[in-house]
Length: 314
Ligand SMILES: [Fe+2]
Image 1 (cartoon, rainbow, N blue to C red):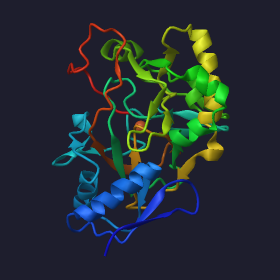
Image 2: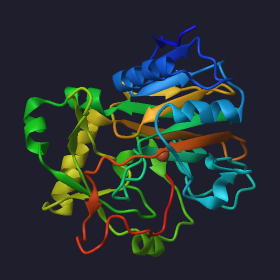
Image 3: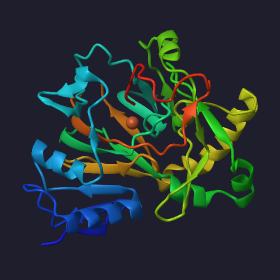
């Protein structure tokens, strides 16, 4: 039996079939999985695993899992597993609160790729849903290669070579929220976030090494400004780009079933958690695939990119 992938009926993810995660993944299967990942950037494993061991075996196919950066979120005895449980008893329920078309939702996170506030960007992540939210709780994904292809040629030329400065902060850039959704979050220490996370710089456009395709590498959530451009002009440009990048007609919204596993390429795919009601319960676990695309840096060149500072997850 060899693993195979098929396009999902909806969206751009590929779904895996005929994979046995109760044993180590063969080298032949691993290569097929990596090829599919390079092709689409988003893989779904449904109905093929219900164990932590299988989650770890799959994670190892994509590289070296990293010990999760927030020790308080580690699951049990496994330091590679990030526990992202939401319960209404959490003291931080307001951190990701939004008004969603007139309805209050918790756990809503706008469009981003992970770790833009660090110079080193993780390769990807494998998310396993133990308990989906009773209502909503979808995760949205956008392919930034397809988004680059949607840009008019004139806009492609204007953004070529630009660099974006990112700042970790309490209030996200409003462009990361879709129309009809407004940020109602509270409870974050903006001064501490800015102090502990110096601004970083990442290119606006990068190239997928394996295929030469261009990626529109803008993470809207903590985008602060374009290097060398005023905040006002930067925000206008971000808004112009967002019309193409964040056009949700091209996004895929995953409706989670228990034990689904989704793997995304963090150098290419943006994601957004769509939230759920405040009294809901949701329990995903995540592994993080290490890596460094080596194109990020701190804005302040005096700061060592490899310094060990504060860490956070988004
Ligand atoms: Fe994220």
